[in-house]
Amino acid sequence: MGVRDEPGQTLRFARSDERTVAWAAVGTGPPLVVGGWWMGHLELNWADPAFRAFFGRLAAGHTVVRYDRPGSGLSPGAPDHSLDGEVAALADVVAALGEAPVTLLGASSGGPVAAALAARRPDLVERLVLYGTFADGSRLASPAVRDQLVALVGTHWGLGSRVLADLFLPGATPAERDGFARFQRASATAATASAALAAAYAFDVRAELDRVAAPTLVLHRRDDRAVPVALGRDVAATVPDASFVALEGDEHFPWRGDADAVRRAVLAFLPGSSPAPRREVTPPTSVLSPRELDVLRLVAEGLADREIARRLSLSPHTVHRHLANVRSKLDLPSRAAAAAYAERHHLLEP
Image 1 (tube, rainbow, N blue to C red):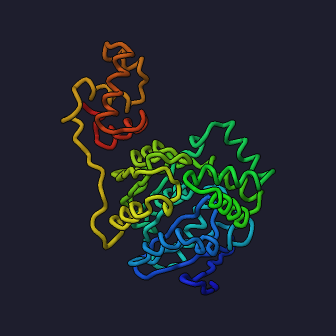
Image 2: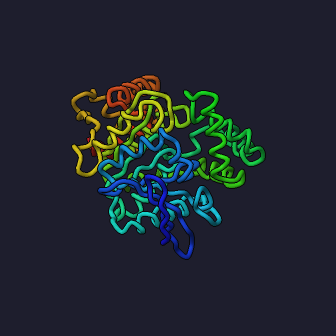
Image 3: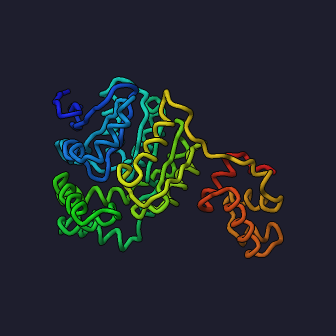
């Protein structure tokens, strides 16, 4: 494992037979490992004052560890953008620390990777923080939009990087967007960026989330355009006993906008801090009517509205209204979240 010093951070290289991963550490204390971003570069990110301030404050009582995904930034070699490959690279970094289990912070497209590692290797993960992320990448955009953007990035990286800058930095100045577009092009080739974007759209960890045993905090800004907040709520509804905190703002990156709100929520959750903010869970029997409970149970059994209507001798419209009331009262973002809630709270038996 090689070591190289940079101002404010120490760069290292974890080498295995399969890959070499560049990673950086700053601060002292329990490790907080930050998953790979859509696009990252250890040196160029650290040169951004807002980025450095955000992670530098997290490092006041923790060792913040970041890494470049293989084939991008300072990590050499051929990239493996499959979910298994991404999880393996993250596991390499955690193993290189020699301090497992650790807290993972998975953000954006790094969220599914961090969640998958937590599900597959509970021995490596003490706590999990997910920010601005999703479980199913296909829900980020329509198939046509996904195909067009992947093709644009692959064939015209200059224009593609600018389109992504507009998406990821809604509140930025023209100069900031130009700078982020240049940063993306400096972090990866067009082919690597296109493959990474296609892989993010293909990530699907829905079947793994209910195996996450580590305490989990899900953070999401309400008006995030890159990853809609509903996708974050779905993640929180599926991970057992996860907490969900909705933050104000539309910035996708946590170091932009009200970065202090993100930092405070993360620090409150980390080991050695005060207990993490927990989502209040109201007993469903105290807020739902008997009929609403019946509908919720049948939704969890996988029945469609018309099937529930026949079972309960109701109209489909009435079933739909009862389910809407259930989701509103329990703050559940989707039908799938309602089903997961019923299973988690053992409501399948009346």
